[in-house]
Length: 629
Image (cartoon, rainbow, N blue to C red; front, side):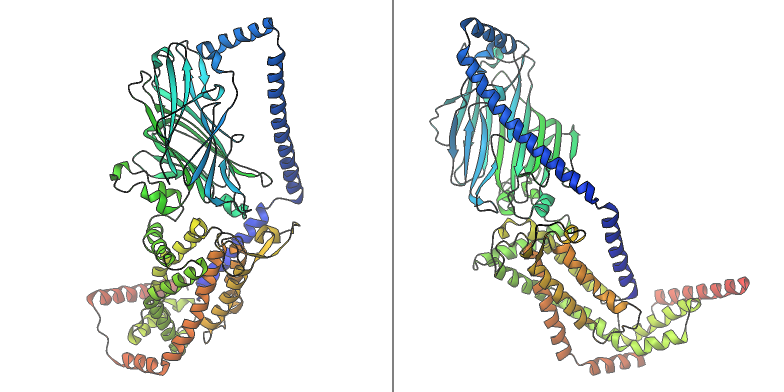
């Protein structure tokens, strides 16, 4: 580890610590935030109870009204809703609509999907996994009637219509004259994708003649399904795809709002591992999207809101078609929806899975995921699969690692000659001569100065791809290994409830065992790799161990699978270093370098011109120094 690297680590550490101390909330602010959250929870509960009481009172009042009062109510409803007045009253009926992988609760009020339960998954507390429920979600279309009244479908009561297709569920909104509007939901066997169609008969007698779009309102509060809330919050986000273009997102760290005039293909509400997606083949326009971060005490992690328009022909000769996806953010499942589809028409739902961008995502999807899937065919334990993946990656990058170790060994063996050059050309005034002499020495000895850096740089995409893979992959969710019950979140060996200043802010209220083991093995690896190197620089030995200790604070709340990967990788690095030193003959390497130095070196025309330019530069520097004196 050279001086510049150490200085870089020190600056990074100081920036992180400074940012924490300058931006951390005071004790009073934390207390006030907790108080406000408690007030918000109480107010929300009171509002819910008041709504229930109000609904009960309204039902009671309707039952107790006199004929004159009832006639007055009917007149008011007729004035506000016109031909739809009779549809504002009714009883909210619930029906179950399901296939092999999910169970939907359908509500007649609004003719909508009230809740979604994913059958193959449970929450971090082993409860049924409800993606959203009736109380915390809304889906409504805004209709402009032929009488120019504005009506939302969420205020109207639909009737269930029997269908000859068992995979089809129909809600009907019918007005006198055999005119109706249908919401048709269709499920395919063993599929998380369902179709949603809006169609009708005699719509010109129900809707305004100027109706060319459907106004869509969709709101969902996403539940906190995982144990590690802070980490899950980082991956819960609202994403959307521009038609024929890339996928973007709203901020996952703070409240965000965006108005988008461009046409969108889909909008996704997601938490760490699951997503609810609304898709339109015709595209969404006039989009208003917002995301709100819920408080730490809330049972919900994010609130999402979408207001958009989608093309609709109210004459009924063309229905409006949509698709809903309710399911896991699993790469293979989402990627399969683009199979056999032209490039321009692909949904790219797999972009919901955060696997890094550009080169990193390419490594993740073409190397890491296929490797995990391959081993998963034969091995059921995710921890063992991670070990095998680590071994394969170590073997894959071994040629690069070997070059890096060989370069560092040669550089260490040249240290006495480098020290002699430093003594011959001391001080800043002779930095150019010292650098030139060092480069000449490396060249004669047959050492590439970048020999240690380039292999590490080439390994970097693989290491970063693994960093993205573990927290984002549902394949690790609730997979146990040794003492760890869930490799997708932290494995707390020690936990506490009290808020400890600084410690709780950096570590959270726990210590993860795999993260602790990773830190220890990194320290040992640093000690092994630095054996025999120059530690004469003041503080250098201490700084070399600073980065592994920082990892403890950085990764303590990350997925245990990631910490286990780094832990096992560090163990292999230690073993690899010892084996390298055992089988590599340093005397032979040194003798070869001495032989190389004795041979005349041929200089290319470019090298000659470069040396002449450097010589001229040195002479000019000497002249300038003489003038200054």
